[in-house]
Image (cartoon, rainbow, N blue to C red):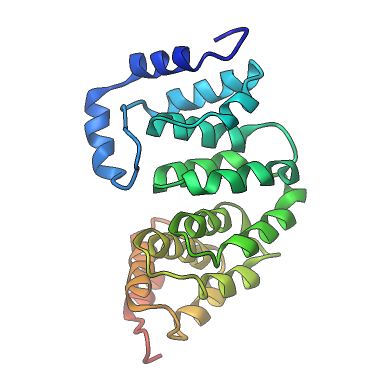
Length: 235
C-alpha cells in the first residue's frame, strides 16, 4: 500500500489475514456489529493501523466508509492513534461515534487513544459532554475513557458522581459502568463504598459491579466478603 491509498489492496490484505476459527469465536463475542466480521485478529489490525499512519494514509482512512468490522476497527485505531493533540482529534472522534456499534471497537479505540497527562482535563470535558447521550455506544465510550484514564486522585470524586448518573438501561453501558466502578473500588475503596451503599444504582448494574469486584484478583478476601454482604437499599 505504498504511494497512493488503495482500499482494494487493504481489503485483500484483510481477507488474506482472516482466520475462520477466530471469526466463529469472535462472532459469539461481538454480536451487535452491523458489519461483516472476517476474523482478523486485533494485533494484525494494529500493525495495519501503524503502517497506514506511517505511510500517510490517515486522512484517507478517516474518509472512507467501512465495509467490514475489521475496516471499522482500523478506522477507530487510526483516529485514536494519530500522533497529534487530543484537541485536534475531537472532531474526528465525534464524527466516528455513530459508527461504533459494538464493545470491541469502542474499547480498542479508548485503549489506543493514550492521551498525555496534560490532556486529561480535555478528556474529562469530552466525557462530560458525551456520557449523558442517548446512544448506547456513545455512553459506553465515555465510560471506558473514564476507566482507562480518569480514575485518579484528581478526578475520582467527579467520575464517581458521573457514573451514578449514567443511563444503564443498555446492557453494554451497564457492564461498562460496573467495570469502571470495580476499578474505582480497587483504587479508591472508601470513596467507592459510599456510592455503592447509597442505593442509587439500578439493581442489575449494582449486582454486576459487586460481581466484577469479587472476581478481581486485585481485591483481597476480606474486601470481597464485605462487598458480597452489601445490599442495595439496606446499608
